[in-house]
Amino acid sequence: MNYSAKQIENAKRNYNAFLQYTTAKEDSNYSVDPFEAERRAEFHNSIVSKIKDGNTELEKEWKLFFLNEEVKEDQKAEASKAKLAANKEASADILAPVKQMKKIGEFGKWLNTSGNPYRKQHFNKKYTVEAVNAFLETL
Figure 1 (cartoon, helix red, strand yellow):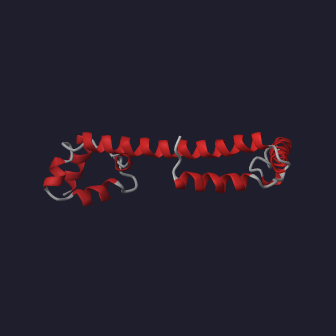
Figure 2: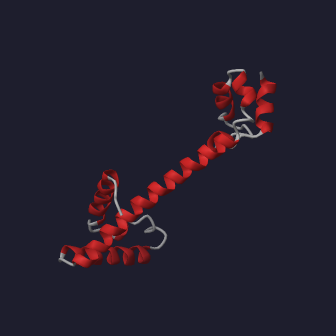
């Protein structure tokens, strides 16, 4: 698999941050369950110790883990972009009246108003006729 320079850079940064020893008090779960936080810190520190002691198999495993996490993150972002584009394309004819009136910018501002029942459409780009008609009534 080919990794982008950005993926490699991010994976290196995350891997190097991972190689730091931790304490139980650094765990966000410490106040709820200090014993679990202690167990997790010991487990993490044992992995870090093994890697620093020269366990190349474990080092390779964790480097690949962070690379794969970067790939998953990029794939998720691409899928989200594709979904938004598909929603926008599917809503093109619904938005036609607003575009004809050259009020698309105002429509976006209106949608993104706090308390607007159609506000979700501003983010998922899946516009409805009801939202367009409600906007047109405000003009």
